[in-house]
Image (tube, rainbow, N blue to C red; front, side):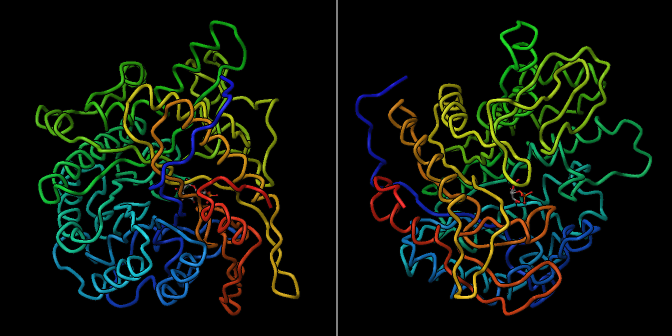
Length: 472
Ligand code: BGP
């Protein structure tokens, strides 16, 4: 739809950016923090471990001051479960509470709204040993953690996100380094969807507890949502795109918003003999937990064609989330899109399409919790980072948000990935996303000094003009 006049961004739009604890904080075992699965996992070859990351734990004041200089209205970060509960349950670590109190207060000092992710890929190692999400009691572990967070930070944190990218944990867990496979597992798909089910219930319970304890606060999920296109107008390809959309996207949002399993996704699980055990009580919790908004990460769309069942299951191409499900859908490259240096397709128009579809299905305000470009950046001798490619990527996505707002979509904010350089999920620090450059590489910590990239100055102007000035 072409618009003659564009609607402005709302005055209270949350312009900001995102990080996650294990990718940014460092101090992995300092001040009483227990190990998470990220601290004990096998680190992908050629990439840094996560012991120091970019040392946000010791640099948070400087980092928040830089975010304030850009004019951030919000900062989305995650709380490390094992900094708060070193063993996952039981004893609370006062030093961990103190750190996040300081971080939250530092944000509020500059009128930056803290948007807190409760779980971002960092299961406590102690709970991994007890069976992780495969255990039904994981629902109670998460509820306990949630309660501690609401008790300690609920007086100041008004926006909460439950589980980051639960769909990616389920679909590509081994890439993220989080998949727990119990001994004796014979049907891995069934096991994975049982864990997924426990997360759905845990999320619903956390939303319920949040509303009881903090009636003023708002809470939502944070999956990775992107439209799946049909590779052609062949009816078989269109059905394949519906299948993949259900398995990748709607399973998670139907459960979070309506408390039900998506029928197509459920049919897929039946075909795989992978239907999870679901109790009556689980269903009641899922129905009772209601989000106030939907947080979501968007990087790119996927494209599929029909699968005759003869292909191999798994990733197809450079992008880990471009999967093939034999007999269901087969991922293919989209010839209309260009790719980043790291092989991820770039699709700003797909961003608009994705939010239009989500809003018409769920009618809840939408908060962008991630979006961004991973690239090799170069620090010049005079301390500059020229990243026009990042500016271009972000500009083209922000333009689409305004078009979506004009389409009538309720958009709450834009928090791209990432506020500052950090360690990529599986490609180390060489794949940078930040507005702020950090001087280190994968195997040399160097000075850890912070530098403002060209995109830093550009984003400042975008925020100052409330999204009206997107020029360089
Ligand atoms: C999302 C995660 C982030 C982040 C980002 C970029 O899936 O929520 O934690 O890492 O993707 O991905 P990558 O680091 O693989 O480039």
